[in-house]
Amino acid sequence: MKRKIVKVDRSATTFYFNTPFSFLSKLVDRRSAVLLTDEHLYKFHQAKFTGWNVIVLKAGEQYKIQATADAILEKLLEMGADRSTMLIGVGGGVVTDLTGYVAAVYMRGLSFGFVPTTLLALVDASVGGKNGVNHGALKNMVGTIRQPAFLLVDYSFLRTLPLAEWQNGFAEIIKHACIKDAAMFKLLQANSLKYYQSKKKELITLIERNAKIKLKVVQADEFEKAERKLLNFGHTLGHALENLYELSHGQAISIGMNYASEISEQLLGFKQNDAVNSLLQQYGLPTNVSYNKRKVFEILKMDKKKAASEINYILLEKIGKAIMLPIPLADLENLL
Image (tube, rainbow, N blue to C red):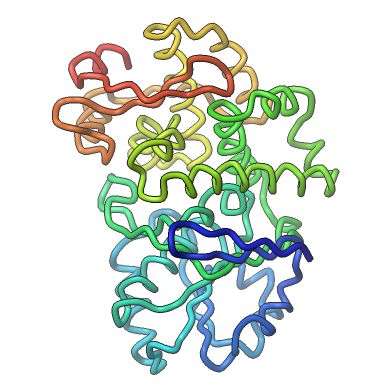
């Protein structure tokens, strides 16, 4: 077990890297804790949940909505949860997002922690304190920024991860490399998804490297006033595509990164667009899709990153260095 305490503003999150799930009972009192998980994870790991209070959710991004949050709130009331209750999200990004969101609003705030079980959650979704739900086709339009008390990282959960979930996680890893870590970009080029699936030590090192990249950004800018906006590379177009066309998060963000790289080439003279495109494909991710430009642009006009008649778009000057560039909506429509 490797323990690391990370402070973000006035909050502190303790990371328990490479720690078995059984250690959870030493962190919290089973009697006052409620675990939230999804039906797929519960099916594969039901024995781990024995003796815990558990709420099992339907699996999938389509259930990351207010109606699911309301159902959780009702269940907590039925269970007699009070302000001493701790919520613990055991699962991927949908579960952790819902857990943090409900914890923020139930009785005006409960303590909460995460046991991230997907690669995407380990390197991105559970790190940084963003929690929330989707509203229609708009991603994460309702939510809070509030840090968990702890993250317990048990890598054994990755053994039951389907290929699509590995690819989702690597989309965010490639994003981090593009915006913050040119050396990691080269490392990814030299290896493959199968390599990391078969090399536990190297995978753990990669996961922790990515978690630290995001944590450093969040520590500098918790509420996304400046540097944290760089983490949206690929997400502006990606989020619009994700809900419109039922793409996975990784697929949508991959396409978004490819388009952002092409725009970077047009506006900033970025010369490594082909390298970004090739690396995404190397890890089994798509880089293009046919889409209804009018429908996508209508969603982009309501994006959280819009300011007046411009969108703050994240572009690349070079591998490892991203910038935010305000692009007028009229110009962006012609670029996409």
